[in-house]
Length: 326
Image (cartoon, rainbow, N blue to C red; front, side, top):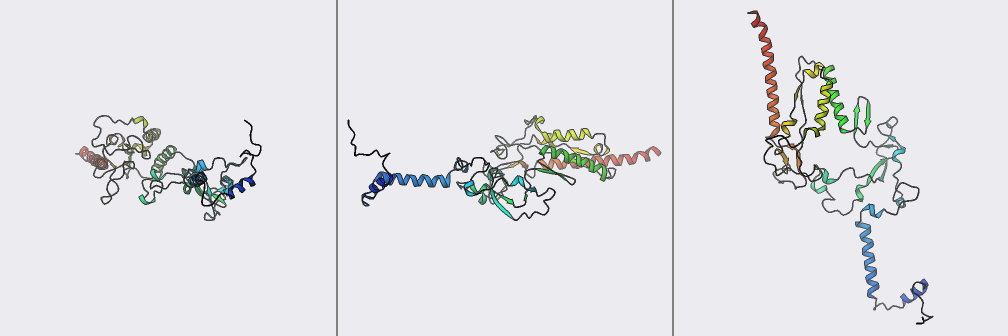
């Protein structure tokens, strides 16, 4: 079959010829195919622009040799490490209120679903907002960097990026040293209460953990292995290391950890929003704090027992000399 030499391949047709053919189309006889194609193109473009996640949108926009994205909008995410820290030497003269909003892919620092203190009306993502661009902007002062992450202050020194465990251990050691240097232990009764375990089932506080179906305590051994209680191990280690000091020897430890670990039934669970609002949603449960009356009352009973025991011991020691004289 011989091709017509006058018929041009659409792929090789010059653009001006295509436009001339387009002009010859009658306005009242539009092609349904062209209209459909244009409609789908517009819809897809708008969907991509407004609704796709920023990580998808930004693919392909990385400039060679640069670490920042969205360079076409003039974003500056490299200035943070080049500035002095606000808490460091030289940062005292920095005006925190002069700066810019910069794009930071490490933001947001938390998710609204993980923070139970946020009012319902402020949970934009959970309330249906489809984009999350507004969560990616960080305030960057012009002449310094804001402090970020967990830090621990020891005297005049601020230690950045301190772990919770190391900070907790240091706080216990600080307490012991303070008791030894500032408190007259012969006239003061010191109590140290250990921590109370949480009882999330099927997750933790930010992954849908629950306890609302728990109605009875664990009457046998706790299902929570004591070896996993890192805070209790830290306390035991610090007290053991200072066991020969008088302030530790005279300190009463209220070890409520083991007994409290059996009370999976005593948490607020869904019932912390108030009587006018009613129970919370199933995925926002509080399995760390306690209902009252409840478990904390038992701690108070133990504390009261310690007081009475100490008073009885003191009274008995006062009677012994007088009885010996008789």
